[in-house]
Image (cartoon, rainbow, N blue to C red; front, side):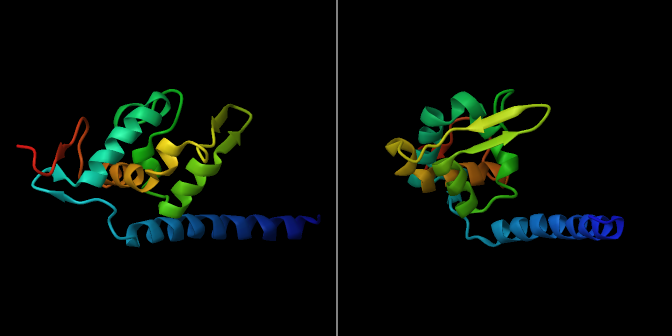
Length: 144
């Protein structure tokens, strides 16, 4: 590849990658909120997402989706991922290998406790990501 072609390819990547990231973030921001929180109390689906997260995701991603030394902070990831992208990673898994580390997210496509409640888990994590739900066990609608 000639030097001029390499420069053009590099310029194209520099210009398109940030716009793709911004487009994805904008699409995630335009989604309807997948949770309901009123007076500090969450709806049943969001509470169920908290429970399911604790059973299937917390061991790697840490309490409240805040990340660990083993897996990334999901409250940050969901600032950039929409529901479909989140579901894709959970169902099919992901492998990120670089020269400095190797991260593997296993597929949960056959784990019924995850797949059947994927929307609830997403709603819980999205509420955490949006900053409208704090750490710890959320109060359910109807709890005093």
